[in-house]
Amino acid sequence: MIHVVPLSRALGAEIVGLDLARPVEDGTARLLRAAWGRHLVLVVRGLSGLSAEAQMRFCRVFGEIGARARPAATRHEPEGAPAGMMYVSNLKQDGRYIGSLPDGEMQFHIDQCYTAAPAIGGCLYAMEIPGSGGDTMFGNLCRAWETLPSDLRRAVADRRAVHVFDHAAYGAQTRDANRPAEGLPSAAHPIAMRHPETGARLLYVNRLMTTHIEGLEARESAAILAKLFDHQERPELIYTHRWRVGDLLLWDNRCTIHARTDFDPSERRHLRRFTLQPRQDRET
Image (cartoon, rainbow, N blue to C red; front, side, top):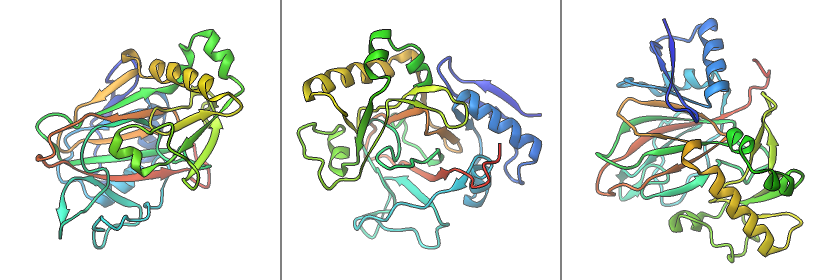
């Protein structure tokens, strides 16, 4: 018997009793998709030795596996890795990191928001975890819109914000607003986005990658964005996941922000990740 156990009032639920050693049956898949739609973040614990193939089977309950980002020159690509797989890891091989985002804190962000069609979700499996820190925080953007003061709602209801991918920002933990964005990957999306499946309104901005609001003077744009960032990062809208080895976690990238807390870089942190794209058949 599978149980869905909420992890916080904001978002997140643990799935108890799920056996991922075998394919997920249709009835269980429907239950999992319903739980994801309601809780936005799903966690399955105690999956010691979970294979990449089993993780991929789990991911395909919710969408298709997205393509892996082009490897950086400083990163050692794992040989024989399944298409779409990457590591979030500070482990090295031959002097190069075997994964991405190896160390340090990271501000709240939405994956691929700088593209026209961002990923619908992400899935992480924890293989090595530091003794403390390296937690992942998730924020509920639907709840953020619901609780946004009416004056801010009116100010941004029909506006679009621009999101920029600036690799240099990751080292600084936040993007320098004065740094030119020309030539960097970017996209504009409605601030009052609607979830493509539920239709719920959500506050689609994030501190790390949102640079400005279209049509507003720079100072006004910055002032409004600062209020929006502070609002969506309020503690009552956040679930903090403290990782254990064997944790499998899936988040809805369309309606959450996520961030990482700092940790001792001398400790090993090694997670396997897949990105989800929409299914072509739009199965529900």
